[in-house]
Image (tube, rainbow, N blue to C red; front, side):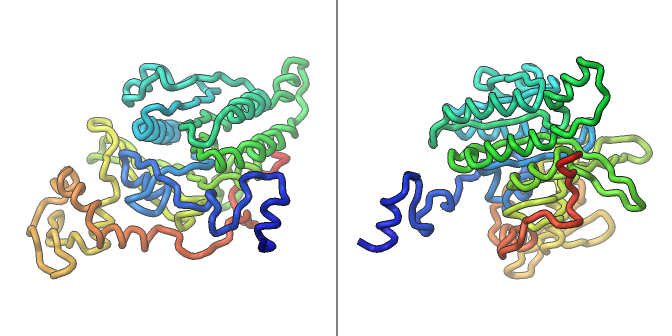
Length: 354
């Protein structure tokens, strides 16, 4: 018997194995959403998508945070017809009608109202303990940014105005408990959070909730938004997924997408810009473009209006299957070398003391 085999048999943890055989480091089966730019944000690849573990989606009010979570929920329940979603809700903005508009079966979503961090911690720990590896469960918390601590509530009831120093520590405890369970049981969790601006000449976005959230998350997306104009009229909004932390995508990458009032989310957002950058589309004249074969350098289709290309579903469906375009996207976004993900002095996280 080898020394490694001897050590395997000696311990009490049944999941132990040689690192080369560990199930925890095998390729995870990604959950592809309907939005290619979101799949890139999760994995750095058009072929990737949501995988198990904690993803924090943070941003200011009305910045597509909850909607992004629902797109992930929809994709998960579509891939796993027997799967269920647990929705921990402190904001009560997700109605049955809202879910149905996303084509999400509300009978497969367990709605769990929560009032404080401790209540969330106790309940989610008990429910995750009932989940076995192979059970298809999706978690969404909407939101941790709007969730008080039990002490904060008690202080208000007792008319105390002292600062609450317990909330960040309670959140740190919550994620310290559930993060290993999410990984070992292959459960994806989307946690919606808030940001606020630090004070200073060049203020940064600060993620609410302390360092525990930052250390536990596989991904942290900070969503920013800007107006999308049609002339002088407001036509919609341009949201940008800023990769604050990721184990799979180059940090500080920016992935924009548009949501217009008259036509909703633009499914192929950013892909035209990426195709121009990769050379699959070349500029002909102002507002007009050529479609180019990279292998031969020949123009496949000359002088098409940019707006027509953006609305051409068949073109983009072919483009995302194109091998050279996929390789370009992965070179641009995918994290292929080892980089440290520990918090540094300039990391935009709130201290544990809040």
